[in-house]
Length: 87
Image (cartoon, rainbow, N blue to C red; front, side, top):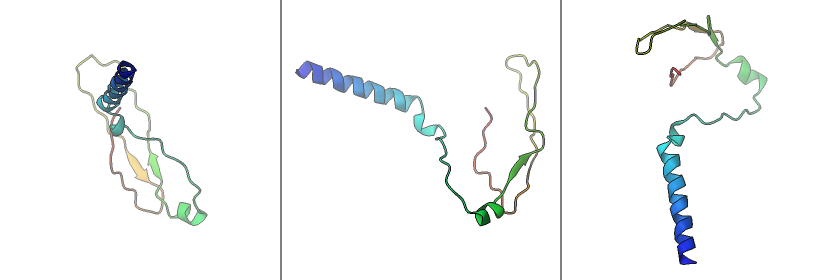
């Protein structure tokens, strides 16, 4: 029985280590939608990408490429971008 308990503890620690090593906490978590009043929506920012898709075509491995996506705020409130990452 003691060996079974030790094995269960070892498995639990191993799974916990995998979760921590995989960076689970660093990944974005799903956003839960909530009901918002019409007044809040009218005063909210609205992000618009002028050309939201860009095709780099064929790029050789190791070659650096870049593109600037132009965005604007079509809403009323201030548009604040706290973190942005490329994929």
